[in-house]
Image (cartoon, rainbow, N blue to C red; front, side, top):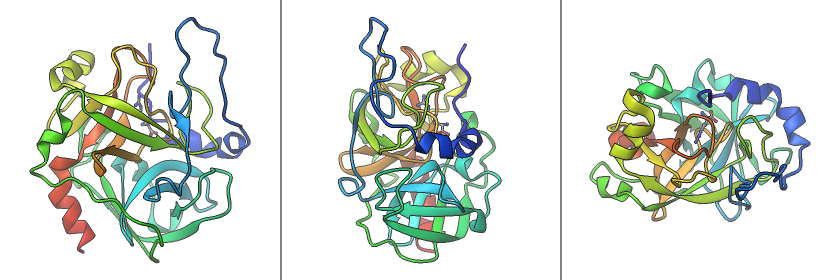
Length: 263
Ligand code: ARG
């Protein structure tokens, strides 16, 4: 019933329309508490989370998120970079609103995509962008390969982005954030079967749904204990009970990312 939520290109096309959309309660007509952000959560600012980056096209239309991990390196999702080139993308820091013009715009000199990446449900959904100019914002640290304990079921993770505030809804003009509990591998396997690759993915969300990342949040940060621990990757629909969000398990790729950051 739900499509895999991967509407990156569609989002870029509708960016101008979405940029004009104000945030707020969207048709909260059902009996269940209607979530908002990302899906469920609240608005915030780029100054509150200075490591959150917009990944945009060359016209600065946001289509994915990213995380600043050093002055010139940004971690994002591989699926966000498919068909992109260094000249087709920009990274924008310090910009709370999708339709804003403030902050810092950086060109990209290199796009590294995990060499094994094929499609989100096979894992390896990680990419590192090298910026042509430094971002004047404080980066966030990221997990190391030995930090596998951070994903223990029930751990609180913070998600951030400008994505849609409901499945098939409109993007948020203002940055949003929420927290979600991590889900055990066995539970996530029950949700997604063989599409959940435990070595490469971690799931998070409430059993009842209601809070989740959604289209346009991909590539953005999944933060545990003040460190980047994941990358928004995929899910069936958004915020539905029994279909948690799926994030790239960064501990698995930490060494590879470090190699890129030092390159
Ligand atoms: N793939 C989506 C994107 O490109 C992110 C989807 C996240 N979905 C979810 N249910 N958590 O923006």
